[in-house]
Length: 386
Ligand SMILES: Cc1ncc(COP(=O)(O)O)c(C=O)c1O
Image (cartoon, rainbow, N blue to C red; front, side, top):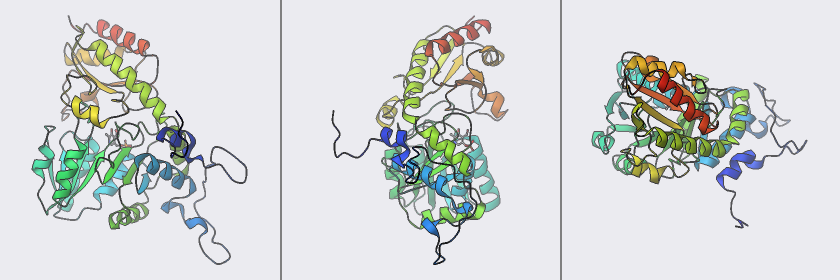
């Protein structure tokens, strides 16, 4: 198939990081621009707009340009961590404004919203995963932000971005979507009507468990965008140049990594669906998952590498499976090339909404047969399923 005169496809953009070959050296990979300050030219004008690294610099700008191209965004801002990006977004809210957010959203984000509610008088309604729950909680004229997370941890509930966008906009509010588990190689939230696509870039975007990153991509460069730029500058929460460079490198293989993780996760989900040691498999790629139909429409590049198993047994047996794993690594986080297993309730503590027998798997890019065999031996050793 020839693509003459067509714009480069997203995987081409990612693999070449926008093909910015250094005009001086021909380097196909950019250097890391570590400078914290940038000299003005002979007319006392900032060269290429760079002044001071708290506003961003060349390496930060490069990764932002790649992310904006992948998201189809008017602009992207990168932050030192996913939480730094979430805090910046929350900082745009004024006292008395209303937010609708999923009860099962990332715990750190939910805790920050609760803090804003207590300290700042932001009004937050947390809603369940049922279809239409977010739309029903919107208060026209008062709701400023509707937040979705899809697929959402650790049950991988799916929210319908397009349907929520219509209801959100009809009420004069903004829609933000945490797409950490569904990067732009599978879901482009802005094209589905979201105003903000959010990522913990620590996960799939970076992909190698070697950096923390937060990403906000916006549909428009409007006063809201200007406000976020000012907040990032004033809070000093911009990503550092070295992390920006690592993120650029990680993004080059995003499409390959995500496709491989998705294929392996689907194979694992199918293998353990109906397995005697497993009471339930939660994966949006399985037709029985309640969000499957929306996910099939919304996740065009694969259902991702995240799934959960409810073991057939007790909570201590579930913890044992995580302890006995020899290929899966017993660690938190997700979206890296190495597979991780975690007993979510142990990590989140007593208040965790996660079922006690739930194990969260982040499937990496290893041989899926090794991963399946590892879970088989760990389930057997833990005595799951009798
Ligand atoms: C869905 C989701 N959103 C946001 C975050 C926060 O990102 P970070 O850890 O990069 O601050 C995480 C981290 O686990 C996450 O899983």
